[in-house]
Every structure is written in structure tokens, then in C-alpha cells.
Amino acid sequence: MNVFTLQHVVNAIIWILPAYVANGSPVVIGKFFLSKNIKRHPIDFNKHFFDGREIFGKNKTLEGFLGGLAAGCLASLILQYMGLHDLALGCLLALGALLGDLVGAFIKRRIGIKPGDPAWILDQVDFLLGSFILQFFFFGDLDMGLAFIAMVLTPLIHILTNFAAYLLKLKNVPW
Image (cartoon, rainbow, N blue to C red; front, side, top):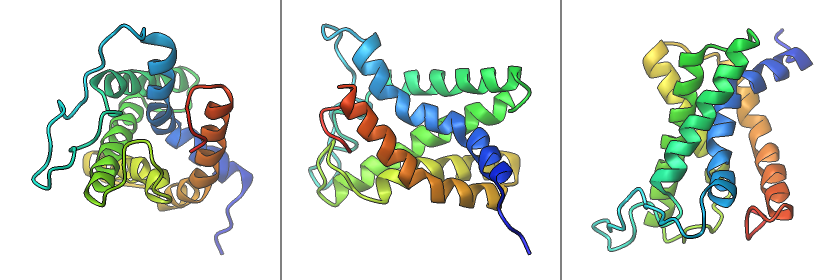
């Protein structure tokens, strides 16, 4: 009988941490590191899809994507230095998180959800699924136990970190 222990939970968090950092850091980067005078560059270049709606939306920027990737890789580098992670895997998880988030934004636009508006469940798992897919594609494996723990923990972590970002005035809404 497989029982998840606290050590499994800790291992899952350490494993997926570069994806968490990549997913959450664009908000921080936009608030603290980019001047309000710096023009942001939407990753979809303000283009619209065949349905007439934005492809990803104005909140998905090149600056946020590249900053998120850099932050996720930096987190992975720190974890590797501590002997807890592999740099290549961590950067891949970070990239997967950002790509998964873009897929989530694309889906939200197709079903008429505006940029910044919540899509419960999708907002909590899109970045994880992107990370899982890239890890499996490039490394040929995925620890389903760690993935399961990450999927279970992430909605709560997502809600708490978004609320904290709202309280810290990093976000205008608590979701």
C-alpha cells in the first residue's frame, strides 16, 4: 500500500518549485522591476484569432514570459546548488509552466473569459500540465506520485499566493 508521507509532499514541492516560481514571478517582475514608463510587449503582438478575440490577451507579455523563465531557472540553479534539483529539468519545468499558462490563456479567450478574470481549475492546473508534458517529452518519465501531490496541493497554494499578492498590492484582484 502506497501512502504519501510528509517527505513525499516536500519532494513534490521541491520538484515543481521552478514551475511555481516561473508561473508567479511575472506579476512581481511587472510590479517591481518594470517601470510604468516602459512599454510592455504583448506576446501575441495584439493580434486576434479567427474568432476575433485576442490570442492570449494584453496581460501575457514578452517581458513576463522571459522574466518568468529567468526566475524559474534561477530557482532551479539555487536548488541545484543545494543538491536538491537538476538545472536542466528545472528550466524545462519553468518553460513548461509558462507555455501551459499561455495555453490556458488561449482557452480562456476562446470561451470568452477576459484577461485577468478567473477560470477556476484551469488557472490552477494549466501551468502544471505544461510542465508535466515537457518533462515527459524531453526526459521520457514523470513521477506520477509527485505529479499527483502537486495537482492536489496547487489549488490551495494558488489561492493563498494570489491572496497574498493582492494584500501586498501586487495584484488588483485576489484571484
